[in-house]
Length: 250
Image 1 (cartoon, rainbow, N blue to C red):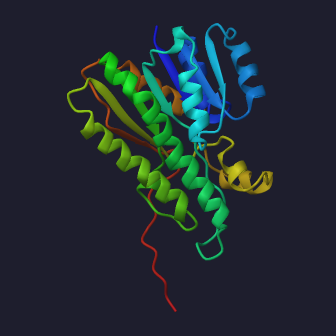
Image 2 (cartoon, helix red, strand yellow; image 1 turned 90 degrees about the vertical axis):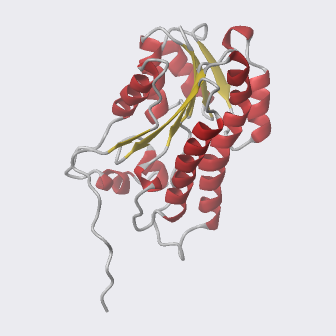
């Protein structure tokens, strides 16, 4: 049995990943802002004796540090950190985008990842084993209109994962990056501030990835033999592919 720490665990990829690892008998640390959803999930997974719940915002460094320092003894030896918490806000061109939205994406998608990694990594190094799985996005590699800061934050996650891998060479700690394409979760609903019609239109007449698809991928990475490091996986639904070059013609 391993101890799995999942951020953004109240919905989407995080919730599905929690369900998958719980079904295989692992101990969970679940972090999200919405405590009521965490409590409900913990009850479904067998109660808080199998799950330690942290109601915190990954953007708040002090909350993260306090949560880690206050872990019960049986949850202190973290085997796997899944840096899943993240979001996109807006889909407008850069000149029309909200600066506040940009800052929230930077604080969540970048700072949240580095705060959790910095808090968990020293213990992994002391114990001589561990695994960090960062959830990025195809937007970190492939630009699209309106992806401006969101894509840039995911490009950071990609490069941070690679640099962690280099820093941790010889320390028996695995680092992997999972980069999903179009996936139907709360992602678009949050991006469009709760507009159901806009969110549904994103997936009109196509079959997107599901949260379970990503959870299965994360679990597979963890199930590989200890000497195998899966550096990076990019997943898209079969209906999605790379776009042609943008050419403006006046």
